[in-house]
Length: 236
Ligand SMILES: Nc1ncnc2c1ncn2[C@@H]1O[C@H](COP(=O)(O)OP(=O)(O)O)[C@@H](O)[C@H]1O
Ligand SMILES: [Mg+2]
Image 1 (cartoon, protein in one colour):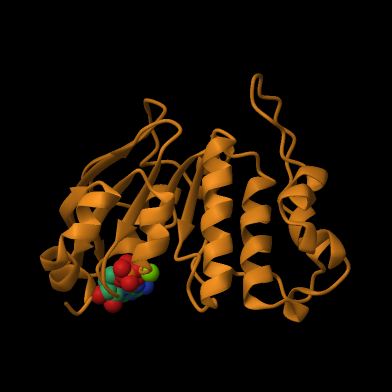
Image 2 (image 1 turned 120 degrees about the horizontal axis):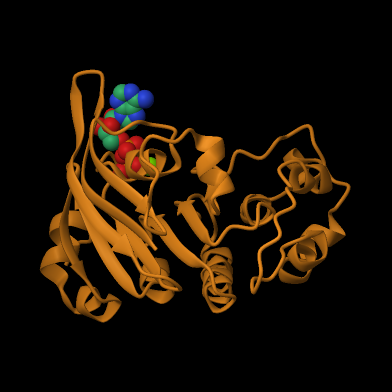
């Protein structure tokens, strides 16, 4: 569904992504793990067109997207939940959700609208008329996910959805990701929370200094303390 091949990316003269290749199969969830500064957000920004790769190819459903601007990439069916959620604080929950809404007639695919979002996140319905600033961190994360779903994506990118959330809320986010996968979405999630990633993902990738240095199943990661210690800062 999504395939990166030998992607190289710079900020000015800083060489950040150093030949990144991986793919996310249809209907699967892939988690990209790694320490702060590893290049995870840069990878996601490069996919959604916010940052241009200097070299390499990015294909979505066999179509090259590396030269497209962000709004066209979004229109192809790639939804993006940014790091830090980026809720509009002076808009209500409902306004945050309806702002990016866009009618796309896609056969054989459920249409995400307000009602379906409220079914998935009943708390957003309760808080429909509250402003973004009046929500807890967990509610803001649900709103950010809901807002991305309103664009009717087939593919969802999430950048550290668990950041700053209490453990019980992180579990809820994990369940939501599993539900979205069951609803047919393909997902790439960037995380620092290993247990959330292992719960939600089919495949784990680890990034270090702009390179994918390890990949495997959640079970393989859980038993590999060396890798956890070396790249994820988990003490043995
Ligand atoms: N806008 C930017 N300008 C210059 N350097 C940046 C910028 N954004 C990120 N970087 C650098 O790129 C590297 C990777 O950052 P990032 O992709 O945000 O890592 P991660 O999301 O894994 O924490 C870091 O060294 C960071 O300092
Ligand atoms: Mg980041």
